[in-house]
Length: 563
Image (tube, rainbow, N blue to C red):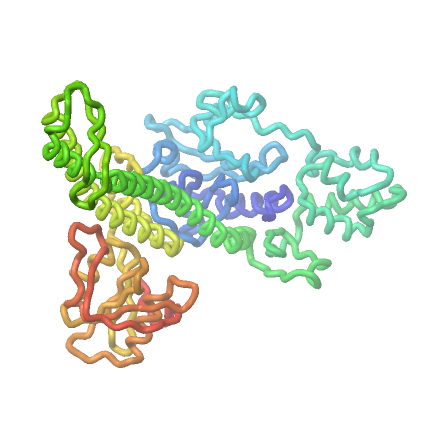
């Protein structure tokens, strides 16, 4: 993404104009590495987002919205303590590098004047957000870098903030002396290696405007003068026209690229960054949170499969229990053949006529040897009864975990993960952190609701919703649908006593199969034929008197009621 110093300088200039004097009303931290400041500036309500996510580091005004966590993190509480009702003094570039700072004028608890700084380092995986006092002493940061991790850029509480060392000269400073050392070769590579602040595309445009080739055999004074003139023009940031070119944000429209790439223009840098970053951020966040849930579910899946393998091994051991019962009987019936000290009894098995050799313990009497085999038999019999029940329960649990994995795989990025987290926590798959103090109760998320030609169709997003729409929302005469012999959502057509047209049933089947990549069999039956699976988990059912239809996957968003 276009986050070189050239683009960030234009962004800082714009934010300084838009936010100067803005007063902070509210601060949120919706993600562990993202802050949102809600401000009142020039009669408008603005939301400033600051993120140090490695994939989408950013600082700009946004129109997107995010849900706040149930309890605010410590860093957010610290900012609220010092910055609520504070005003923005200015926004700028710090240390001629990809570091934007916001200076705040605030009041202490004793109503004394105070100054605070928020530094947003936009450096991809090295990005960070650091909060300091007027003397640049660090009060806290999103990412802490102690001495043993970063000797040149230490970020811990109480230490003075020092920017990341930049070995190259910034184009905002006196970089012309560097150009005087170049004679011939790859000029584009030379600039990128020795002058900071430019991305590769920016350097290509710079050379194009200066009418200098990237490969130079003789870099003369005339070329150097034209190049220095263009660098000076870039510093002024005059005549900005923000745009997105080939997935990157730039402060000006590059005419040389218009014939090669699609150029989308915007009225402000913030709008350009917001348009580019909002969807990317949503995708990154969704992949991150779902990856964590998927990993926990996968571990739980593997643990259950291991338990099932142990169950099957125990059952295999129990296959020999009848042999021990027969040994016990044969010892009793042939007790007259056993002499003191015998270690083996050779006799005929009267069940099949074969000759068998029965090991004996010479320390025990014949009756006790027989009792020992009967004890082995009874123990294995009890084990078999227990393990068979446990195997059924483990296989049911495995099916339930597979359904959770299906939920995770099909969960949209704007859907809440709390029901899935609760399910995994109940199974011991994850440990939920206890929230401190009072927390806001999260509102239950509704299922998908469709309205098709007067018929309401409900589809669950998770096992909890599946259970609710099947056994609480639907009546006995409503139509119930589910993927045949597969995990998936429960779908219900609310009939209200009406007969269901074939078209409505077809659409409901397609909605049920919408999580699949190809056409799938969908079972359908009246709700009264569906019952909870005995000793099963949420969403696990058994049903009878059903029919099956082949449905192609189609979410039918045109019928979806927006919530």
